[in-house]
Structure formats: structure tokens, C-alpha cells
Length: 371
Ligand code: KG4
Ligand code: ZN
Image 1 (cartoon, rainbow, N blue to C red):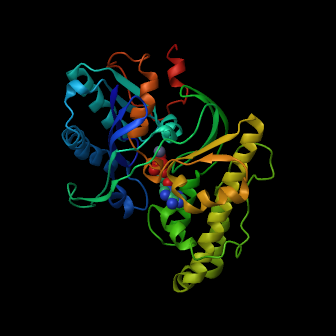
Image 2 (spheres, protein in one colour):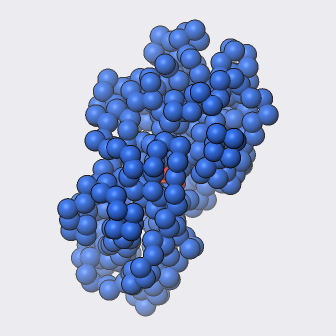
């Protein structure tokens, strides 16, 4: 069964074709980072406009590049929420119009459930296209990543999912593709948001995660003993705003100008901050594994691209079975949406034209629909 997936919840427009919930045939991602960089964060109105400009050409390209006819497509899938409501609307309304016109079922998917499903996707023979949209001429795109082959992770249900992105940081016990149990979440900032804010404090640019990671590579992780918030509490919740304030104090004490002229100092601040986030994320994930009695952990979402987070698993949670999707599937993508949709195909056999984008969609929304 071939499903065409659409993802527009934030600042990536993505279209994918996935077979039987697992094999990625095609996954195209158009990132708007350059569009939002000069504002230091995502501007919702600009994001919606860019989705409008890119989405239909990307669907056409996906069909053409894969020699797919509409008769080959068995269903459409779309991210219903959560996310920026204007951005979600572009995907949902486009998917509804297409499903109606082509007489296909339309399967709504939860964005975070999609991230949690991403380790199950296999990329063998997949066409991955990752382009960065230019800030001025919307059609000027530059290819970043052509091909990416990888097997599905050896993961089975139940497992603990650590979701770490720009908007979410939570620990979730995943019983099945449809049943989730929230174990803990952040009380304030998300981990990615903390990276982005600290990068802004240091005048590094946007998005901050990859830039902080790059600076941290040559830094001393022990130079600044930053707090490890909530680590001494036996729950699975997080808090990152105090860590950001502690980083702000270091910046104030040294002065931004001095930091910018001293590459080692800048790298040491980045490395110390990154280590605090990584240690808290992994040790809290260990608590979640203990509490749930489950022996597998999947780390998903944009921050899961972080090399130190991947490496530090062996140091902070030795012995745990941990899987990460490849980086192209950690950031927002439609392959995870089309893949998970396959598990919901019986519940959504038609195109429901009353479907509406929901900025705060609950993770268990399918079950509330009477399953
Ligand atoms: O999952 P994602 O692409 O979008 C959301 O759903 O939020 O995550 C984006 C977040 C941003 O905050 C970005 O700074 C962070 O992921 N991120 C990273 C890295 N790459 C992306 N954080 C730390 N290290 C990275 N290498
Ligand atoms: Zn996401």
C-alpha cells in the first residue's frame, strides 16, 4: 500500500511516499531556515506563505520523479497537529482537496506520534531530497542531501520515546503505534528552544542547535559547572529555563564582546551548556526506563541530530538499548507521517472533509474518535 504524506506543521514543507508503513520510496524536505534566520526564530505568517508556494510543486515533483500516477496512490496522510495553526492549515486543506478530487482516503496523523514512529522507517533505495529555501527568491533552492540509505532500527513495542525538538521535550511510553502513555515533559522551555535561545545570547545565529554543537566540538565541557535542573527529583519531567538563565549569567560576567574575541571561551561555554542538556536528557530517560520496566529507548526529534547526545549514551546510560533515526528523519519530515498513517488506514477509509488543523492536538486523538 502506497501512502503520500504531507507535513507542514512548522518551518519545513515535506512530501513523501512510503510503502506499507515502512519503506521510504521518496522523502522531500524544503527547509525555511534561511527565511526565518534574520528574525531569530520562526515567523508564522512567513512560514504559511512559504508552505503555499512550495507544497503543490513538491507534490508534483514527487509524483513525477517517482513515475507515480494517482492510481498508484492508495491513500493520503497529513499532519493534523500540533504546530502553527496557519502552517498546518496549508497541509490539511491541500490534502483534503487532493483526496476529494482523486477519490482517496485521507489519514490524519499526530506530529509527535510521527516523530516517535520515525525509527521504524527504512531508507533502502529511498530518494531523499533536502533543500534549503532561499530568503528572497522563493523558488531558488539548493540541494543539500541527495541519497541516504539505512535499515529500519531494531525496535519493538513497547519502548520509551524521548522526544526532543524545538517545541517539545517529553518522555513517552509507546505501547503501540496508537497507544501512548506520557511519563514526563518539560515544565518550561523545550530542549531545542534552549539551544536556540543560548545561541541567540551568544550571537551565533538560527537555528541554534547545530551552531552550538559546532562550537562545542573544541570546547571544555567541565569549564563551567552549569546546573542539572530537576535531576535530583525522581520524576521524568524537565526544566531548561534555569539553565538558560545560568548561561546568560556567564555571558554577562564575561561580556559578549570578549566572548566573541575569544574562540576558546565561546567553545567552552557552548560545550558546558550542551553537556548539561545532554546529561539531563539522558539521565531522565534512564529514570523513565527504570519506572516503566522497558528496556529500549528511541530518541527522536531535531535535537536527536546532536552528535554529543548520540555519543554520550554510552557514558550516561551504559547498557541501555538506544536507537536514533538517521538525522534526515530526526528533523520534520513527511515520511514519518506517511509511515505511521499505514497503521491507521482502517480507521480512516474515506476523506473526511470536516477535518481541521489543530494547534494543540492531543497525542491520543485517534482513540478519542471512538476507536
Ligand atoms: O524536530 P524539529 O526539526 O522541529 C520541531 O518540531 O521543533 O526540531 C528543531 C529543533 C531546533 O530547536 C534546533 O535548534 C534543534 O532541533 N536541533 C539541534 C540540532 N539540530 C537541530 N539541537 C542540538 N543539536 C543539533 N545538532
Ligand atoms: Zn517536529
